Image (cartoon, rainbow, N blue to C red; front, side):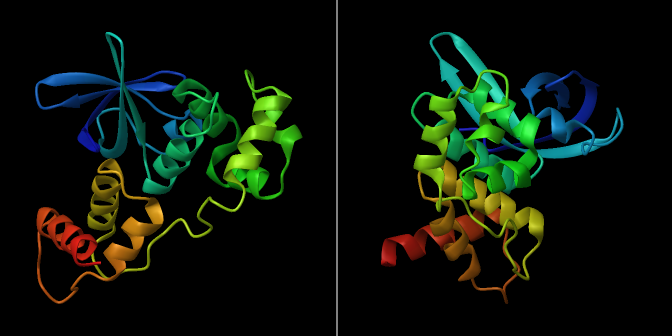
Length: 193
Protein backbone atom coordinates (compact mmCIF):
# COMPACT_ATOMS: atom_id res chain seq x y z
CA UNK A 1 0.00 0.00 0.00
CA UNK A 2 1.30 3.46 -0.87
CA UNK A 3 0.42 5.76 2.07
CA UNK A 4 2.36 8.83 1.02
CA UNK A 5 4.47 10.35 -1.74
CA UNK A 6 7.08 13.12 -1.79
CA UNK A 7 8.10 14.78 -4.98
CA UNK A 8 8.21 17.82 -7.22
CA UNK A 9 4.99 19.38 -8.51
CA UNK A 10 5.16 19.43 -12.32
CA UNK A 11 1.63 20.15 -13.60
CA UNK A 12 -1.75 20.86 -11.99
CA UNK A 13 -5.18 20.28 -13.53
CA UNK A 14 -8.67 20.91 -12.17
CA UNK A 15 -8.59 17.91 -9.77
CA UNK A 16 -5.24 16.24 -10.44
CA UNK A 17 -1.53 16.92 -10.39
CA UNK A 18 1.57 15.37 -11.89
CA UNK A 19 4.16 14.72 -9.20
CA UNK A 20 7.71 13.70 -10.12
CA UNK A 21 8.93 11.08 -7.66
CA UNK A 22 12.49 10.09 -8.46
CA UNK A 23 12.54 9.47 -12.19
CA UNK A 24 8.82 8.68 -12.41
CA UNK A 25 5.92 11.11 -12.82
CA UNK A 26 2.70 10.09 -11.10
CA UNK A 27 -0.79 11.40 -11.76
CA UNK A 28 -2.43 12.00 -8.39
CA UNK A 29 -6.07 13.02 -8.04
CA UNK A 30 -6.52 15.70 -5.36
CA UNK A 31 -9.47 17.81 -4.17
CA UNK A 32 -9.60 20.94 -6.33
CA UNK A 33 -9.85 23.03 -3.14
CA UNK A 34 -6.40 21.72 -2.14
CA UNK A 35 -4.55 22.54 -5.35
CA UNK A 36 -3.93 26.17 -4.34
CA UNK A 37 -2.39 24.95 -1.06
CA UNK A 38 0.22 22.78 -2.78
CA UNK A 39 2.55 25.58 -3.86
CA UNK A 40 4.04 26.69 -7.15
CA UNK A 41 5.17 24.45 -9.99
CA UNK A 42 8.58 23.02 -9.20
CA UNK A 43 8.01 23.06 -5.44
CA UNK A 44 8.55 19.99 -3.28
CA UNK A 45 5.53 18.56 -1.51
CA UNK A 46 4.30 15.62 0.50
CA UNK A 47 0.87 14.07 0.04
CA UNK A 48 -0.93 11.46 2.10
CA UNK A 49 -2.36 8.98 -0.35
CA UNK A 50 -5.00 6.36 -0.96
CA UNK A 51 -4.26 3.79 -3.67
CA UNK A 52 -7.30 2.38 -5.46
CA UNK A 53 -6.97 -0.71 -7.67
CA UNK A 54 -10.10 -1.59 -9.60
CA UNK A 55 -10.00 -4.24 -12.32
CA UNK A 56 -7.06 -3.08 -14.44
CA UNK A 57 -7.11 0.58 -13.37
CA UNK A 58 -4.76 1.88 -10.69
CA UNK A 59 -5.64 5.33 -9.29
CA UNK A 60 -3.78 7.35 -6.67
CA UNK A 61 -5.64 9.95 -4.59
CA UNK A 62 -3.60 12.48 -2.62
CA UNK A 63 -4.31 14.88 0.24
CA UNK A 64 -2.22 17.59 1.91
CA UNK A 65 -3.33 16.55 5.43
CA UNK A 66 -4.17 13.30 7.18
CA UNK A 67 -7.49 14.86 8.15
CA UNK A 68 -8.51 15.22 4.48
CA UNK A 69 -7.45 11.60 3.88
CA UNK A 70 -9.55 10.50 6.87
CA UNK A 71 -12.61 12.32 5.50
CA UNK A 72 -12.04 10.74 2.08
CA UNK A 73 -11.75 7.26 3.64
CA UNK A 74 -14.89 7.80 5.71
CA UNK A 75 -16.83 8.91 2.63
CA UNK A 76 -15.71 5.95 0.52
CA UNK A 77 -16.91 3.69 3.33
CA UNK A 78 -20.48 4.89 2.79
CA UNK A 79 -22.52 2.58 0.55
CA UNK A 80 -22.95 4.12 -2.90
CA UNK A 81 -20.14 6.68 -2.50
CA UNK A 82 -17.03 5.95 -4.53
CA UNK A 83 -13.69 7.72 -4.62
CA UNK A 84 -14.65 10.14 -7.44
CA UNK A 85 -17.78 11.25 -5.58
CA UNK A 86 -15.80 11.56 -2.33
CA UNK A 87 -13.26 13.72 -4.15
CA UNK A 88 -16.08 15.87 -5.58
CA UNK A 89 -17.52 16.40 -2.07
CA UNK A 90 -14.14 17.44 -0.68
CA UNK A 91 -13.49 19.67 -3.70
CA UNK A 92 -16.83 21.43 -3.47
CA UNK A 93 -17.34 21.74 0.30
CA UNK A 94 -13.78 21.62 1.63
CA UNK A 95 -12.81 19.74 4.78
CA UNK A 96 -14.56 21.94 7.34
CA UNK A 97 -17.64 22.49 5.15
CA UNK A 98 -18.07 18.76 4.66
CA UNK A 99 -17.60 18.09 8.34
CA UNK A 100 -20.15 20.77 9.29
CA UNK A 101 -22.69 19.56 6.72
CA UNK A 102 -22.53 16.03 8.14
CA UNK A 103 -22.59 17.20 11.77
CA UNK A 104 -25.60 19.48 11.12
CA UNK A 105 -27.42 16.93 8.94
CA UNK A 106 -27.39 19.46 6.09
CA UNK A 107 -28.63 17.23 3.26
CA UNK A 108 -29.17 20.28 1.02
CA UNK A 109 -25.49 21.28 1.20
CA UNK A 110 -24.34 17.75 0.42
CA UNK A 111 -26.83 17.29 -2.43
CA UNK A 112 -25.70 20.59 -3.99
CA UNK A 113 -22.54 18.77 -5.12
CA UNK A 114 -22.75 17.45 -8.67
CA UNK A 115 -23.53 13.73 -8.66
CA UNK A 116 -24.88 13.65 -5.09
CA UNK A 117 -28.64 13.18 -4.87
CA UNK A 118 -30.78 13.56 -1.76
CA UNK A 119 -30.75 9.80 -1.14
CA UNK A 120 -26.93 9.60 -1.15
CA UNK A 121 -26.66 12.81 0.91
CA UNK A 122 -29.07 11.38 3.50
CA UNK A 123 -27.07 8.15 3.61
CA UNK A 124 -23.82 10.10 4.17
CA UNK A 125 -25.39 11.97 7.09
CA UNK A 126 -26.90 8.80 8.54
CA UNK A 127 -23.69 6.76 8.36
CA UNK A 128 -21.15 9.46 9.28
CA UNK A 129 -22.92 11.74 11.78
CA UNK A 130 -20.98 11.61 15.04
CA UNK A 131 -18.18 9.56 13.47
CA UNK A 132 -16.07 12.32 11.93
CA UNK A 133 -13.29 13.58 14.14
CA UNK A 134 -13.83 17.11 15.41
CA UNK A 135 -10.14 17.84 16.05
CA UNK A 136 -8.13 17.63 12.81
CA UNK A 137 -4.71 17.92 14.43
CA UNK A 138 -2.92 15.71 16.91
CA UNK A 139 -1.27 17.68 19.68
CA UNK A 140 2.02 15.91 20.06
CA UNK A 141 5.64 16.90 20.56
CA UNK A 142 6.86 14.65 17.76
CA UNK A 143 7.14 16.29 14.33
CA UNK A 144 3.83 16.81 12.58
CA UNK A 145 5.00 15.05 9.44
CA UNK A 146 5.99 12.06 11.61
CA UNK A 147 2.56 12.07 13.24
CA UNK A 148 0.87 12.13 9.85
CA UNK A 149 3.09 9.39 8.47
CA UNK A 150 2.49 7.14 11.48
CA UNK A 151 -1.28 7.71 11.44
CA UNK A 152 -1.44 7.15 7.68
CA UNK A 153 0.50 3.89 7.99
CA UNK A 154 -1.69 2.62 10.84
CA UNK A 155 -4.94 3.46 9.05
CA UNK A 156 -3.59 1.76 5.91
CA UNK A 157 -3.09 -1.34 8.05
CA UNK A 158 -6.78 -1.28 8.99
CA UNK A 159 -6.83 0.55 12.32
CA UNK A 160 -9.40 3.31 12.81
CA UNK A 161 -8.28 6.92 12.87
CA UNK A 162 -9.11 7.27 16.55
CA UNK A 163 -7.12 4.10 17.39
CA UNK A 164 -4.16 5.42 15.37
CA UNK A 165 -4.29 8.84 17.04
CA UNK A 166 -4.53 7.27 20.48
CA UNK A 167 -1.52 5.06 19.77
CA UNK A 168 0.51 8.07 18.51
CA UNK A 169 -0.34 10.09 21.61
CA UNK A 170 0.95 7.21 23.80
CA UNK A 171 4.32 6.89 22.04
CA UNK A 172 7.53 7.42 24.00
CA UNK A 173 8.42 11.02 23.14
CA UNK A 174 11.86 11.06 24.78
CA UNK A 175 13.69 8.91 22.24
CA UNK A 176 14.77 10.08 18.81
CA UNK A 177 12.99 7.48 16.69
CA UNK A 178 12.47 7.06 12.98
CA UNK A 179 8.95 6.87 11.56
CA UNK A 180 9.39 3.11 11.20
CA UNK A 181 10.30 2.80 14.90
CA UNK A 182 7.23 4.83 15.86
CA UNK A 183 5.01 2.61 13.73
CA UNK A 184 6.57 -0.45 15.35
CA UNK A 185 5.96 1.01 18.84
CA UNK A 186 2.34 1.76 17.97
CA UNK A 187 1.81 -1.78 16.65
CA UNK A 188 3.31 -3.16 19.87
CA UNK A 189 0.70 -1.14 21.80
CA UNK A 190 -2.07 -2.75 19.76
CA UNK A 191 -0.55 -6.18 20.41
CA UNK A 192 -0.32 -5.55 24.15
CA UNK A 193 -3.88 -4.14 24.35
